[in-house]
Length: 274
Image 1 (cartoon, helix red, strand yellow):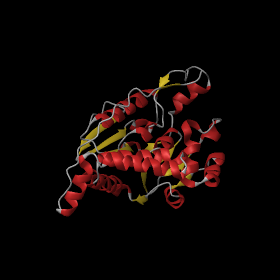
Image 2: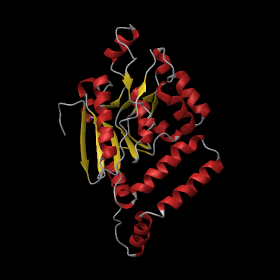
Image 3: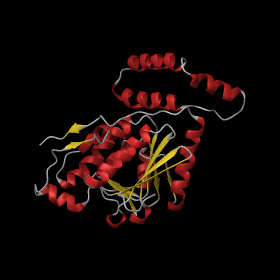
Image 4: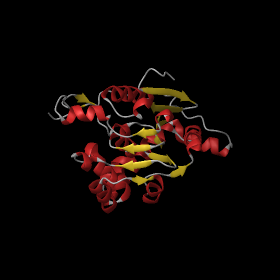
């Protein structure tokens, strides 16, 4: 890992770790960090050796990501900077064809919460705090976060969290179903890494990409549309070697040897409104 970049990146045993690394600013979000983050996200998507992506904050910053850096907020609010530039959608995590896991190690708010919510699975360390914060900054629920929250925890709970902008801790996040588990700080990355490596070693990347698409796109499908998509994927998957390998490895009581997946997502870009 390089200490000079706002994002630190490494790949080990099929798991890519993307670490937000601005510890002097508690890993707060900036345009420079954003560009570096998406560059590494695309790199992981395109690397067939990468099976799982873990997103976390530099532990030296004592936070996951507390949102946009306050210096940038001041510029934005006083119109000294513009948001009308080409950007990648902050929902891009849902299009990464590999499972994404947020390892939330401290404050998680605003833009940090957006990216945590669009990960497929979330773990949090004890002492972590969450807030949507948007209403308290005079902002709408940005980047589809209202859509995500309502589907993860229901409309009533989402309304509470978004309209109040209140803080809630890791234990409440667990009760609400926002995180899979809450663990001690020194156990967070080992726990997440073990979970990720189990998936990387034993699950078909092709099947994972299909299941992920079913999960996210299925949120707006009818039951029959979801059933038809599953049939289509089942037919296609049986034409490839993953199904045969999954069966044979199970019968032979050996680890599977599935091929990797590589997808280029760089063409997905939006133009923010003036």
